[in-house]
Image 1 (cartoon, rainbow, N blue to C red):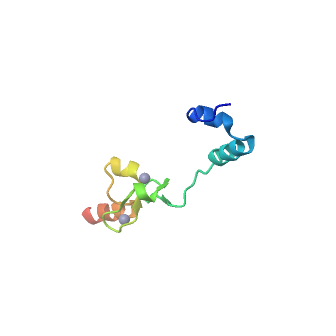
Image 2: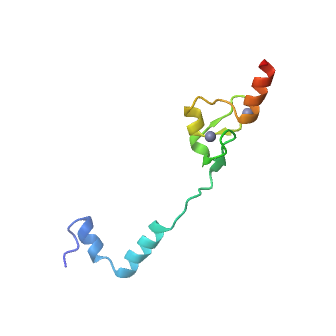
Image 3: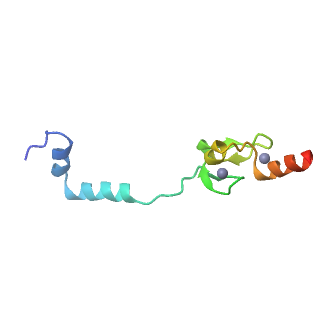
Length: 85
Ligand SMILES: [Zn+2]
Ligand SMILES: [Zn+2]
């Protein structure tokens, strides 16, 4: 068998053990990453690196809420509302 003909040939030339090991690794369901944070507006857990801080207290707000125009967490939003009223 020719083992120097590109990625597909290389896959076929791999010993079965290595192939199974790689597949097992890639198929492991790892849903939660350790940088996940709970959005203080909608309560969803999102990646901290993809969110923005509340403009008042700096707590985490997810990207989805930011896209919807949310700049403050729920607590600060309530506070801002009562302060205005
Ligand atoms: Zn959110
Ligand atoms: Zn806040």
